[in-house]
Length: 232
Image (cartoon, rainbow, N blue to C red; front, top):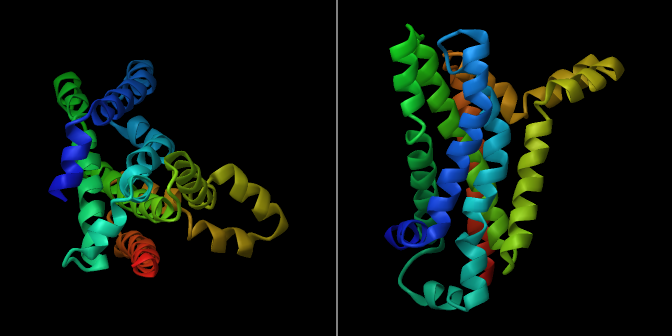
């Protein structure tokens, strides 16, 4: 985990990702804040499922693909480290990086309290939901990275799988499905990340949403371990 964190923060790539993340989210959120006149971060959190969909695969694409490309995966697997330990080490490094990225958006929270009286519960729920969303996207991206030695391919696979789970909770698509079958629409919605994320972003922390996030994360980390075990 320390080695992977060093790879993020000892090279310009990590800082470039953070800067672009903050620029994009601020560029779209700040005008909304002043146009609505409401002191809340709802617009920021609504934007995050799409923004993280693009950024998290960029964070995770190198986790395993780079090891395979440089030929260091065999060295790593020959060490007295179990596959699940290696997977979790890389995963937690990426999760800490995402946490730092989200934490650096905190000046927006300070600005809100300076401008008005925002709902603290909604803000806490929004950041909790964002972290859970990052957990899911990162687990999927790590799994995608373990499938190939090319980082671009890993990025495309990761964003594609994440995109499927995003679209399963995307309201315009669900409305089209609902016209054909309301039951199918309700069934598909429950597997979409946005359906669960929006609930938490409103400040409502439902155990079902937490179970969904942990289960999906655990599933793809388990698949990641299986791929690495096969390489071993």
